[in-house]
Amino acid sequence: MKTLTHEKLTIVGAAGMIGSNMAQTAIMMGLTSNICLYDPYAPGLEGVAEELFHCGFEGVNITFTSDIKEALTGAKYIVNSGGEGMTREDHQKGNAAIAEEFGKNVKAYCPDVKHIVVIFNPADITGLITLLYSGLKPSQVTTLAALDSTRLRSELAKHFGISMDQVENCRTNGGEWGEN
Image (cartoon, rainbow, N blue to C red; front, side):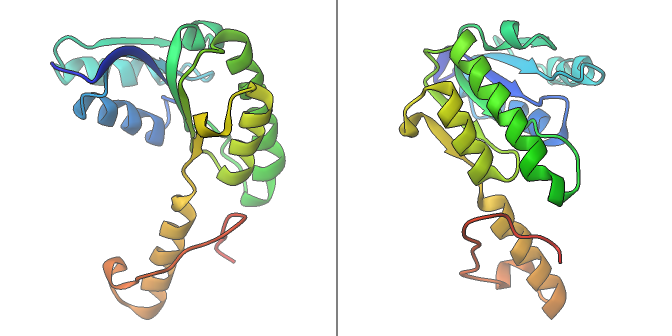
């Protein structure tokens, strides 16, 4: 299988639905032939790796671990979808602490990382905290905050009884949008 690079991509939170989908998508898009699946909650992680092995992707090195040092060492790219499952009210405090620890781990184990994508909510806060504690440049950390705009579109479509693709030019700004 031809890939854009052979450099290591670590998927943080790989045992979860978003993380496992990100791993499969990266392989299918041919982004890299070297993917490490990491999740501190090891149950389920081996199953995700096995499912990817069973897809028959040729020439792809898939490893998995619940050891953050092993996962980040040598990583050049990181996608982090690993926040905690909690109420929206608790996200900011709980996930801010996770982002701080993640940033410190990046600084300690892979200071030469090229790029990080932070997905877990509230993405604007967790991305900024990751940036501050990792010591990286702002151009090296991206957040996926479009999730909240997608959720808003979905709720508006339900409310008005229309399909989501009919809701246009709808965006959230700043903190995350809730179902209040």
